[in-house]
Length: 223
Image (cartoon, rainbow, N blue to C red; front, side, top):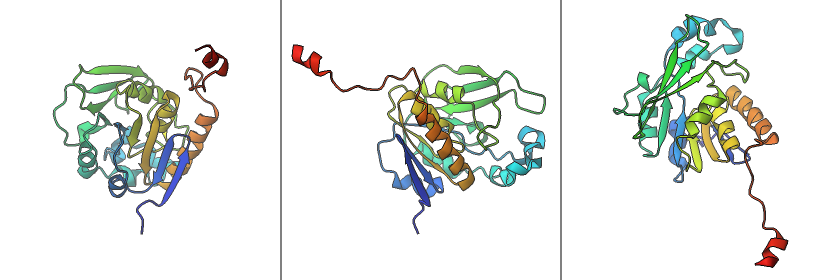
């Protein structure tokens, strides 16, 4: 049985439903960067335990209790520019450039900040942004501006991987930046929600991204 349970191609995004550890060996080369946010294993400690009480997030605690070092080892084995949110909960190499998300509207039951490990030889950096609402069916979705900021650290990356794409935030950020994306998600409910969100993102292209245009025949005639 194939580890790829479903696959959707939306614009320049390749979305795969399946276990990342089983799917990653099938992706081959060409990946230029990783930007990802795996489960941290916090379970009931997440948001003071409030998520587990909500019916729409049933099953959330079950997957969030799992935090496997194998995930991180597989990602690091790709040896590409990498950003891993929540890497302070895993065994990662020493890093010079940790990224800090300062949650400017955090409440006492939430963390004031979150950290991402990188393999960049740069000073540590901070991004000030509020915690977003749960608009896309995933309780731990990162704000889109935060992930767009992450992509600014890999400007030359053409194909970005997220092995835990959840509600599709990294894919949407890539679409808006004119980058290709490939990712895996193991939960079918989140997968479906991400597909819908990414389709909408392509239906409303970023006004600041200038698409390539075919040559003007009149200009060519002047050459």
